[in-house]
Amino acid sequence: MKVFLVAGEASGDRLGAALMAGLRELRPDMRFCGVGGPLMQAEGLDSLFPMSDLSVMGLAEIIPRYPHLRRRLHQAADAAVSEAPDLLVTIDSPDFCLRLARLVRARAHTRIVHYVAPSVWAWRPGRAARMAGRVDQVLAVLPFEPPYMEAAGVACDFVGHPVVSEPAATPDEIAAFRDKHALKGPALCVLPGSRQGEIARLAPVFGRTLADLARTMPDLAAVVPVAPGLMSAMKELTKDWPLDPVLIDAGERSPKWAAFGACDAALAASGTVSLELARAGVPMIVAYDMAWLSRKIISAMARIDTVTLVNLVSETRAVPEFIGARCRADLIAPALQGLLRNPETRAPQQAAARLTMERLGLHDAPPGLRAAQAILARL
Image (cartoon, rainbow, N blue to C red; front, top):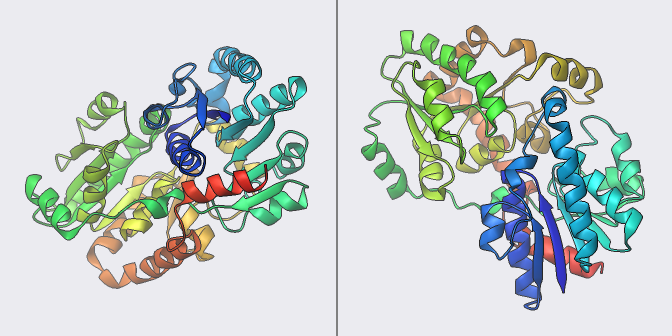
């Protein structure tokens, strides 16, 4: 059985790799082709072109790269048709992947599965109805998503979120990390994003926030897990930060999770990282901003009052947010100081984190295997 997979960013690469492992466990004859990153390539995928070519977020950010993205779209569609796979699996990156599904559907009868339901509950709800003619099945990673897709006529299965498969660091790993980096007092985990555009926009705000904190908490340490491929950029962006931040490679599992466990609180960009921090039991503040045009358009179309996944899954508003115009150091720093200095302020977040992990499938089969089972069950 041949499967053509397409992932467009690091989170999709993780999903794709786990799915490939699950499919091979159930069907050892599986063969794979398509587009993916290093994790999918480690599972046997020979990527058609670098996955990083597709890693763009934000409406305004896409515009200058549109011609290149369009070429890659048609290149992927041509390959998906010529390879004649039994199954096409598009992973996350809905703006790219659903266009790809439409092009392939127009030229072939390949069964198409989209992994990660688009956030129609947050904005652009019409995407669910448009998917009905493009894909045969959707795999959801959030438990409240299947009804939205099924109402639009798309078969949808909740398969659990990959974060529940991540093993938190052991006490020994955490202690070793603190010793290695001489973390003697309170520590703050600082996560300004996983894309070049995000870190360029958020790093200055996060740096000013640290400067505000350093004036009243001079013993505070800052730990910065850096997404793969961004270490040079992050070193440049943080060279003037106070507190002499510790930069670590977040592409390596053990250091990243040990860093989470070693920290008392976190300042994070919006995204999946909030679930990772919840998995590690780290209370957090979420702060995010984007290009002015993207902010205006998305704000006008938003259907939710929180962007933090922990808040959404737990049905609480336990994690404070500073989004858009409120993404300012003078607002963020006092909230972080409260988390760092007052342990009682962390309890609501810790309860929300536990509930979130339960609802995401913490005690069920691994999501990659569940996704493979859901795909094969509907073939």
